[in-house]
Length: 261
Image (tube, helix red, strand yellow):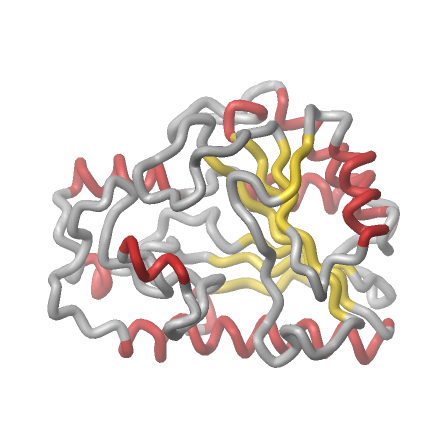
């Protein structure tokens, strides 16, 4: 569905894409009917699962930058589909019912009926999103010779039951990497620029980064980094308003992304 995501144009010469997949709380009515939670429980689940304010963070960073980046923003909740999951058995979050279409909540309770068929949601939301993101990467490659995907996320200061790797550190800034698509220079720049906000760590408590499957582990011109910001750095948890840390964070993200343009 065209309005379920938004491609926001940047400078024609910028290879940078700020990707914001998990910021929305919007669930269409036809999708809501397939969710088992009552309204109060659903609002609480959205507080826990939504990367609140990350679309505003990306927009604010873009406003600070010398060369405006491109933005790709999911306008639907990840409870509709999660566009960053593998749509097949490669997805490790299948073990907790949180593959491309979630069947369990952050607390591992039922979200959808056991017989739920995910394919209509994949066809309506997941695959069009993937195609549009692939097209944007292709456009940046054609225009600039490279594409740099900065995946903008946030995560709670305390682990939630769905997390598979919750035993490690939970730094202010977690940098998710990929062996093929995250060159050392990109990671080093992130540590320097985002380290102004607080300590950084690599791939803890979340690892990896998003690259469209057409380019995944095949095209080194596509580089990527996941930026996971601990929520108490910039907002009131679990689903409250931004705090004073938001402004500093947006400037640090802009400084980092500007070095990549």
